[in-house]
Length: 446
Ligand code: MV4
Image (tube, rainbow, N blue to C red):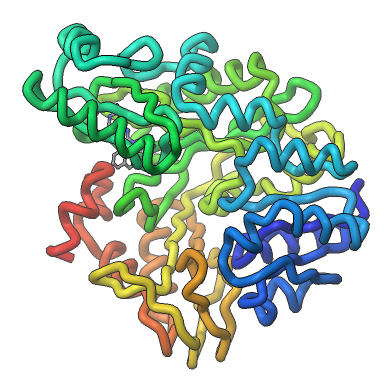
């Protein structure tokens, strides 16, 4: 097992990883920007190194500074966390050429899944269901019109280097093709320096359902259940749950087995998430995230598996200690992502937390880096706490989540906590009656 792990991240996820390391007897190195010197992960780590100024590009994305910090502290492995460099193929390779283990998948899998066309073609070959669309990239308006006639309207143009919704344009009929094609191309060019686009049939009312998988170096692949992440706004998830109660047991087992077979054949190692759209009983693969995800705790709650510890063990060459048969989904879990934002405009609200009380009790988990009098910085994303609730059924989980939100106090900054409290009381949410567009369509009413 590793002796010392450098955690190349900040915030709640840095603490999450640090906790796993401590419980495994591994010493920890925190890296931090100048703005983050007084963050809780820095206080909790065995050692810490400042890697640059506040701006992420100069610190948390500064590969040279991070590798130097690893070298001077003698870390033997590096955990990239989520976001930042976690899906950077070049960084993953450099960590390994510097003699450390990268706690993540193989660089070639990071690269393959980073290109959305390659990812989709890979999944087609592996027998994973995808949405009907172009065979690879689309290079002209005439070609786009031909494809649209074949697959049927509405169609969606997507940037090959996209993800997170950037570079997506819908065309409802032939007249809208030209503008949609050109706009998707120019968004791709300006956001990712790549104007390659492809096309799909546009699904109008899907759910976002994603599967958590974990694979070791010996061909063992296990699915740790699915998460329904449909409650989102501008591709920012607000509430996630596991299991996705919309699925029948038959459809659930079938997609688990399809995905596990595919991942085994791919030779993928580590943790990963396959994102699907689910509409009218049909799964369509969208993207694969080759990293730990923010919402992994709901899967941990219902499976009882510590995903981060398993991820570290896999990187250290250990075999998975469980098989698919060992995985039972226990009850229901919901995560509420509390952001330091104005709850009506979603504009970030950095500043000092003057009062803080977190809920507790049976079945409540708090993953957070904030503390009373801490300062929430304007430089990074505005997630300040994840409140994860676990109970026997979805109904009792919602009751417990309402109780948790009624206890929560965060003063001094604006947060989305009250929005979460109203979501938990909303009839559509309680009745499990929503799709990916529900939140933006209902924000005015809740
Ligand atoms: C789609 C889609 C409808 N039809 N593809 C958004 C980001 C990327 N992960 C894929 N996305 C979508 N792809 C087809 N063929 C709708 C979306 C989409 C979406 C997906 C998941 C969660 C939220 C979303 C919000 C808007 C659009």
